[in-house]
Length: 304
Length: 138
Ligand SMILES: [Zn+2]
Image (cartoon, rainbow over all chains, first blue to last red; front, side, top):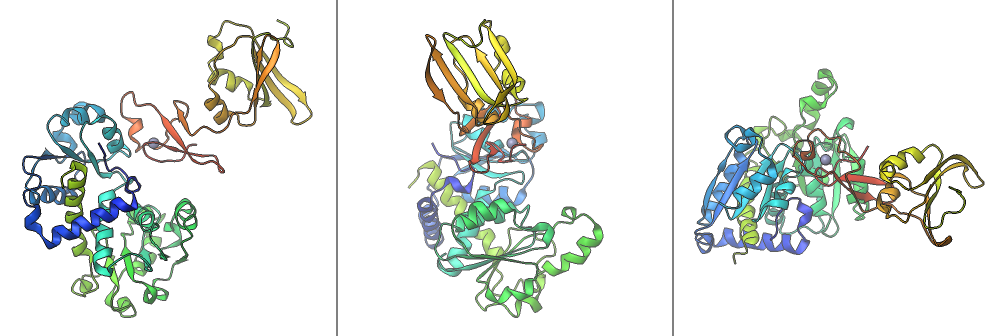
């Protein structure tokens, strides 16, 4: 019985197979509408994340399955002090598969050690969020036709943004990738990610604080939120925040087939004036996330 | 006890000077009722000064733990008064119940009876990461 805790739990072949299934679901949704008839997904959300929970629930409904669960810790037995291990054992009696969101890092891993059904990590604190990475990969695959040879730009908070680290790790398995890291000094990609992923896989990368000098080289631009609380001072935040906002002016120099992505929610780092630009892919990314969750549920349940 | 002539036992040699009590505690040697000699600041050609622990019993040692806390020590296994084996413990792949995760957001800080598990992430740099949250040790 397999779970998905970290994107690195999946081999490249498994990811390619999930991408193929998602593409097939998009092409023939009717074929999949009864695949999970009689199956139940439990969404255990120990902290609220409406967006992710709805994506999982929509995915299960579109497969003809049912959903049960809770969306905050107060309404669960965790508020009475039940351990994650016990919750996992108990819910295994009711559901065929579990999607778990938890504020504590490693909680879904602990759940997977005790559950008798597959666990999907739907986000554990700031640690892992593998289904976001799956959504990102399907977006790139559909918008670019593949992964080899792409130049990927990551912009904003590259230090704490785990979605960036996971996507870089997943992309490192493909050929001729180049990475451009755009961030303030304070929020640079941690050196262990550079060493253990980029250098280890021989991926060429450049680091810059100057967004505008590199935007014309990118095939993918992955934007992230620059959070106020990451800065030492308010002045510094105010000085830097506008440098990492994507505006129509900055986009003018970009390639005509650039794909702009964002894990959402956005605050102001992408100007709404870009939303109707064909290069804006962040809302499609949400839709693709649902299809990848459908493909993942099918794979973990062993439904063909 | 003649500390130079152990019949059946173990000598932990080349301990960095000053570290012998830490190893004594970590290996739970106070639980043993056999004779144990602790030699501090012995002169060593190689190290200047070193500590040595001699245990006069054929016990099982946790080599993984020794490899983590005291890499570079040598372990002499003595049987019938003869040195039968010399070992140098290496950094273990996994350490259970020795390091505590310092990340306040880690599940190991709240989940009851969860063992503290660290895995070797980088042998060269001696970096261990928490099995649950992947934070670095120390
Ligand atoms: Zn931890």
